[in-house]
Amino acid sequence: MKKNFSLISLGCARTLVDSEQMVQSMQSVGFAMVPEGTKEEVTVLNTCSFIQDAIIETEQNIELLINRKKDNIIKTICVVGCYPSRFKEPELKEKYPEVDLWCTTKDESTLHQRLGELVFKRRYTPEKKQRYTKLSPSHYAYLKISEGCDNWCTFCTIPKIRGKHNSKTIEEIRQDAKLQIAMGAKELIIIAEDTTAWGEDIYGEPSLEKLIEGLADLDAWIRLMYIFPSRVTDRLIKAMAETKNIIPYIDIPIQHVNTELLSAMNRRHDKAFLEQMITDMRTAIPD
Image 1 (cartoon, rainbow, N blue to C red):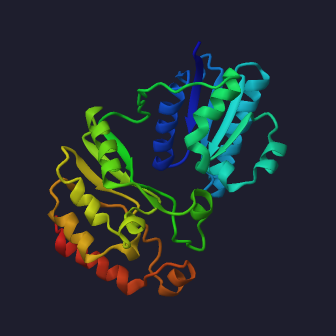
Image 2 (image 1 turned 135 degrees about the vertical axis):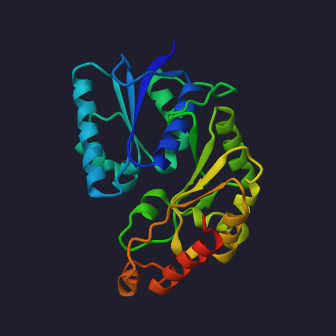
């Protein structure tokens, strides 16, 4: 007999993609997703802990779920993602003993197995064909091309939370893209902790332009986000300018232009580099 579960997804689009993959895997071991507050027995909270406000929001949601459990509205609480990745599990168990399962970002691929064994009290054999459930509107989709980050900016906890950078292959990304297009996506939004680092672990150098070329034949617009300034090359700009389905838009965390402060942030560029990069982009992509 299937068990109903709900899922709360906090934080960024990368977390949302992870949440969609969790739903798919959980449905393969005997769970059925229902809207939050509709007689679910299990609630999965996918969390963010990047900044203090995100930690506060996560802890408020955990406390809300604990109250629901005490009122017998739900039976099982699972907290997954960045929050249990940032803090040590023994500390979390002591702080929130009512939470039944903690799962870090590194363990998300086994969430369905662990939660299935916890709830059903026996091992479940996954269905051969898994059903993908979108949590965002059908006309666009987030396409996560890699996991983790190796930049180690001095102010950022992402490498500690998400681990080392690991790229998906072009074929894996194309399969994800084709699935989203088949479900109605007209725009694919490329995301990662650092999209410009894509391919470095495969080809020995950042190679986002190769991925752009590998997606050029897809019947969908492509939008680039999370571009790291110092990895923007002439090759990348050229690929953006010449690839017809690339939207002339770029999401890039400039954050500051003071060279001294950029150095303190452990950014590998200065003000002059940023100015030249923007000029090069405007020259190559005037519209």
